[in-house]
Length: 221
Ligand SMILES: *Cc1c(COP(=O)(O)O)cnc(C)c1O
Image (tube, rainbow, N blue to C red; front, side):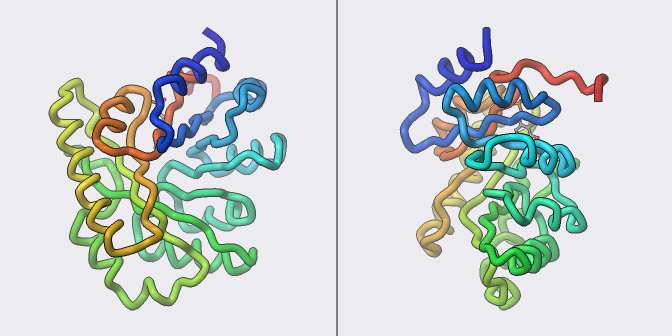
């Protein structure tokens, strides 16, 4: 199936309140252009240099989502154009995004990554740390970032109940924050393998790579 057909198939079943981000990491600009020509405007990338490069080569009305773990020293490269940063996992990173956003006279939208999976390797705040951050004085100093929601990745498992419980826990935190803060509107959860479950559990944004562009081949890069 072509990229356009894959997009069509996924979008057909999406509720109107769910945004589809096409995750194009490792994929060539030709395939992104195919998706673009099929009407797709939101694209997600993990690697900063690749994101910078693709931003230069592709149409300016693409909304670029930085979805992977982000190092503070890389923020400056994407600050001029990034649409949404998904995986903010420390106050230090938020402060750096704020600094670079200010330099570019922008307000950059951010999602806080919440650690919901059982795996040790996944980055993010736990629920308590997240609430502490929202209550902190340090956050109030940052006028060039806007926290618009949360992002999370479920455990990589076949067990649907585990995934469901993790998504539900994230949704619960999201709902609580959304009642306190008007800007909190985006819940980024769900990838190719688990997006249907994520939508059932209240996701408003799904990040889909392989189901649109095919499996990634890391051996070539
Ligand atoms: C690569 C990636 C995705 C997309 O994964 P697929 O399984 O190909 O849909 C989604 N979210 C993040 C954070 C990723 O790194």
